[in-house]
Length: 78
Image (cartoon, rainbow, N blue to C red; front, side):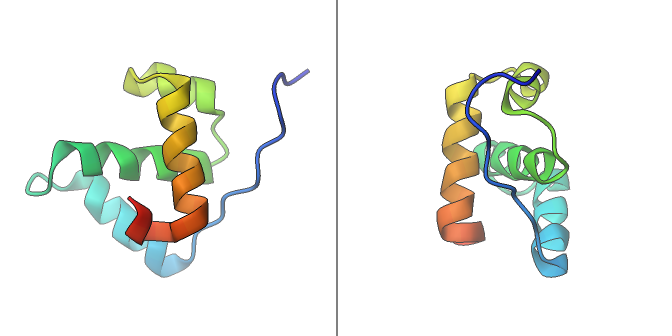
């Protein structure tokens, strides 16, 4: 049984998916932006925040912050 509050489903448009995938692979943009793109891509794939945090070696609060910010402001929020 899942624990915690239910999360708002995060869905991406094709354009957002493409742009985030490019950002996640980039070697020329700041590492923090690459990490944020990876967080959003994993969340859109249905991965729980706790698993994203473990895999990317971040806190759950950090993952939750960027997930929520993306839901509010989309790519411009990253």
